[in-house]
Structure formats: C-alpha cells, structure tokens
Image (spheres, rainbow, N blue to C red):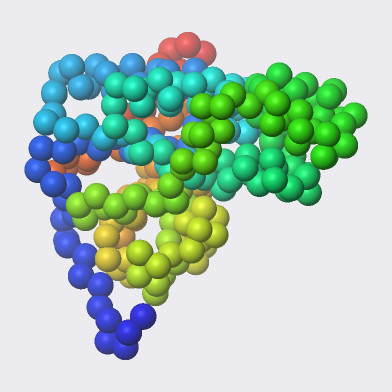
Length: 254
Ligand SMILES: [Mn+2]
C-alpha cells in the first residue's frame, strides 16, 4: 500500500439503483435448506419485483451435511433462471485439488470430505478401504461434467457498488483487488478483529455466528446452517439491508 493511502468507504454503502442482491451464506451440504431458501426468495421476488436480481453464493457448498451433490444441482438449476455468482469457499477448493493430487484428498477427508464423497456415491466403506490415489480416480469418474465445470468456475471474490463479497474475508492493509486466494478463502481473526475501513463493506461467510453479525466494516452471514438449520440470505437493495432465513421453517418442521 502506498504511504498515505486512505480508504474512503461511504458511511451508507449502496448498490447501483434498480439492483437487488441476495447474498447466501455457507450451505455445507444442506440441500433441504437451500431449496427452502430459494422458495423464500421466489416469494420475495414475486412480492417485490426489482429491475435486476443477482444471487451471490458465498461458498462452502459441500462437506459436513449429507447432500453436497444435490446442493450443486440446485445452484446449477438456479443459474438457468437467475444471474448467480458462485464464490469459492475453502471446502470447495479441495475438489479440484483432490483430483490433481492424492495427498490433497487426504487433507480433504480431514475436512469432512467423506460426506461429499458419499453424496456422489462413494460410501464411507469405499473411502476407508481405498488408497488416496484410487479414491481420487474414483471421484473423477463419478463427478458429473457440469459439476466439474462449476468447481472450475468458482470466483474468489466479487464486488458490486460499495459491497465486496468473499467467502472468509480480506486481509487488512491490502487493497481489495490485491487480496490473495488464501486470505479470501481462509482468513479468520486477522480479518474479524480488524475494526478499520476496508474500502468497501465486506459481506462474508466462513465463520459461524448465531445471528448475522453486522459491523461498521463487514457483515458475517454464516449462520451455521449445517448445525442450526438456519440458512441466511442478506438482501441488499440501494442502501437497504434485509434478512431472509430458513429458521422459522426448520423450527416448524422439527
Ligand atoms: Mn469456510
């Protein structure tokens, strides 16, 4: 950063006029919740049709929950009717790495990759008895081509108006267009503890919170859907923020 460089973040961040963003937090294999959330968004769109709509998925589609494959199918189907920007989460990054390098397959299994493999038909028993290189080959054989393209196409960040979207956050002191993939996908305390200006309002997931965490410089929307049943969408229009989440539906079903 050049000496004397100062961020100039507006006090009330806003999107371009006529645009509405639905930013969606970490799904982690809960296709049931994502389907519910899309239905809630459809109802919201029917009630209040905007000029332009964008869905921004904040990453971590897979692992932990039971239905990673179905989550990807839902996002691909959604992309036919809507503009969907799918960002890369740290968990999602293991898919391509594991196909390339069997040792990364080992790292992925330590990050709950076994649930994702199971959703693609590779059972825990198969995983347990397979060498990592065989497992990588077996995974390559069952991963549908559109899914491979989906994982290849994930972006590490996206900016619109005064908002900047990334899975985990950004590193303080580095311009938003110079952030590393490692930080955008993995950063925690160095980002979360920073209370200075980042230049834009950062919308992120990755670090679970019970309720959406709104600070002066960032908004965290990973409401731990996998465990809590609450998958959250932050709705942004102009400088107005709203929340839509699945908690009520999940509670009724329980
Ligand atoms: Mn994450």
